[in-house]
Image (cartoon, rainbow, N blue to C red; front, side, top):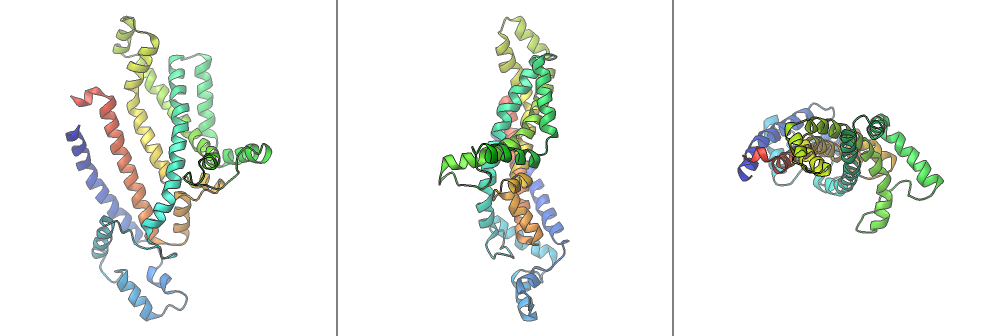
Length: 313
């Protein structure tokens, strides 16, 4: 397994380097001069010249990239042009909120989508299959922001069971935190559960018709053992890939859902940074997002290795 991990990391490092070059290069194409923004309304030429030197804006593009990468390797992502706070500090403030929301949403999706897909595949053509497909169609067709507004009207305005918006840290009040996160987690998990259900059903149908499954049944194994131990385990490979990508999407910022429920997460940070032309924050956010995707793909590869014995040979 160690050799497998080393090979995967060796292929991911060049990808991460290319992504960093792409992020930095595209950032230079955006309009606006950070030095002039920092100089304020007066825009004193002396101040602008000092800021350009401080930010290395007077250096050639490759040199500026080298300075930026050097800072990134030391954990320094720069400073926010608008708030003058370190970008790393801003990300560390906002990212845990989105991580919690993403994990809760994935928990909802996994607990609903995978069992529904297994039941639909095993009971192909039955009422359970049709019900699961209707659920998947509903989940894929329902906009997140619309479902979120409806849930607020029902559970917050009409019934008064849950808070309509806001966020409370789990370290301050775990019960209040879960009460505030349950609706946005369900809204996000609903759509992902529909996708997981359809992929699980498709993968299970292929596996259930395989020779080794028929052999397992011929040996007299119970249907539950055949489905869960033999079929589902071999059907997990595409599901793991999909789950990793969906989790990466959630961690990059569930913008609309966070706006509807007024959750101060990664999505709001991205939107504010783009509108305020806070280039350092945009670079840091995009780099963290890209690194997260790459890391999740590595985790997915390791999961393949664990669930698929053929990769160990």
